[in-house]
Amino acid sequence: MIGLLIIISSLLIPFIPFKLLRKIYFLLIPVFVFLFLISISKGFFGEIPIEWKFYFLNYELTCRIDKLSLVFAYVFTIIAVCANIYSIHIKNDLEHVTAMIYYGSTIGAVFAGDLISLYIFWKIMTISAVFLIWFRGTRAARSAGFRYLIWHVISGSCLLAGIVLHVQNTGSIEFDNFTIFMDSESFPYLLILLGFMINAAVIPFHSWLPDSYPEASITGAIYMTAFTTKCAVYALARAFPGLEILAWLGAVMAMYGVIFAMMVNDGRRLLSYHIVSQLGYMVCGIGLGTSLAINGAVSLAFGNVIYKGLLFMGMGAVIVATGRSKFTELGGLYKYMRSTFYLYMIGAFSIAGFPLFAGFVCKTMTIHASAELNLPIIFILLEGAAIGTHLCIGLKLPWNVWFSREKPVEITYTGVPRNMLVAMGLAAFLCIFFGTYPGYKILYDLLPYSVEFTPYEPPKVLNTLQFFTFVSIAFFVYREKYKGVAATILDTDWFGRILGNKIIRFSEVQLVDLARKLDKSSSLFARKVKVLFTTPEAVFKQSTSGGRSGSELLSSGIWLLIVLLLMLVYLTYLILV
Image (tube, rainbow, N blue to C red; front, side, top):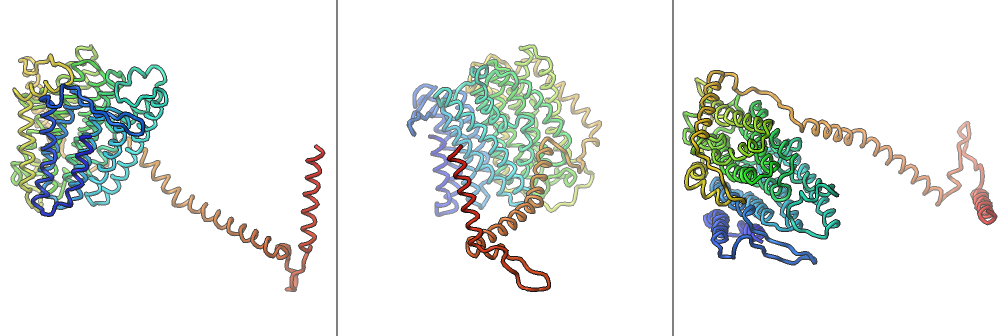
């Protein structure tokens, strides 16, 4: 219901007569939702959990608000406020409408207590996100948008098939924990799991993310970093907590994303690969399944939405100001963009887990949960990914963009709209607020389970500071090796692209030739049939030698008599046999 109201409200934006009123209305949509969420938390609608039921085609649809859904709704609304401020200068009202439809569908999916509502909002998310990519207007954006659509059509198809089979087996459309069904008749739930995993960019189904996010519009990418993947994390936490395979896949994701982020030459592509890494921590925490691990996954999703949005805002500001995003084309921007640099670095310290920033109070939960469960391989992978995070986000990217050149690269600097810096300032403040008291206490109170975890214990702080110090020293000693290199990085999408290109070439050449031959043959056959039934004697004429006119071999009457005789013989055979 809440998501549907947001979507309906967004459709009114183009019809508001004055430009200033449209902007105010656009900004106020998530603000009103935030106030509504606070009223829910304060108990104005009853004690949580709350369920509002509606009836549709003999099915009971449910809007469910509990601690798990509420914490995701809060952070989606917070980033929507920041992203709306960041994009308020955009003149295209359709982009604003699309962004709010995307936001509303995500809120609808989070509050969906039944599978029908979940699927409907899931598909609206897909369609609206595609348009945020296409609004970039480039050829690369159009191609990336189509590839994004293909991936998410597959995701939605898997989800729909699993839902249909589940309803057939159980008669229930409730969206709840499905792990209890995984031992018997697990096929429907494997389909649902696959649908969620694709949207969560779980490897090897992750390549759509670093392919599409860098090509999205500058402002649209901020919404995309928050909604699709984190909504899938919510769905996994709701439906498959404690599924062991997710713990191992998540740990591998955390390291995999960092490795590829170290190799790429584009700022937003680096940040996109690092989303895969951060999602790995969340998926791993869900797979571990303990209260500490689930709290860690949810709190990390909360923090990641904010500081990853800030990082994309910073890189988006660089693209707006310079028109460039590749490291080999940037460098020395500190002279021009100091404010952007400092705000970006707050996001970088947050995502790396530096004390006094949001990441420190979120990320360490999942790592400690793996240690408590005595899973050394997962622990090492997560710790290794933490090292790579600081190298990629806190050192490599800012070094290549704002420094790295004794003489700044020749650019046409156009400046950054003030509203973009205001949005970055708000996100940066939140990164610090939730990383310190009472901010992290407020966050911990929102988590689905009671928190028995103290982030600011002296050994934890000391270990983190040592880790940052040694990694930073190593980077500056070997910093020349971390410069951007123009190269094509092959990922798992290479297989799909090769297969896709072969299918396209086959369709354009061999299939078209076959179609032409069939068309020619069918046309010739049709003409002969037409002649046979209009002037049958013409079929049996042939030219004589010497240029003389053709002569009939047999008259049409004789041929008709032969056919009748054959039919009589066949009829006699049927009667006798």
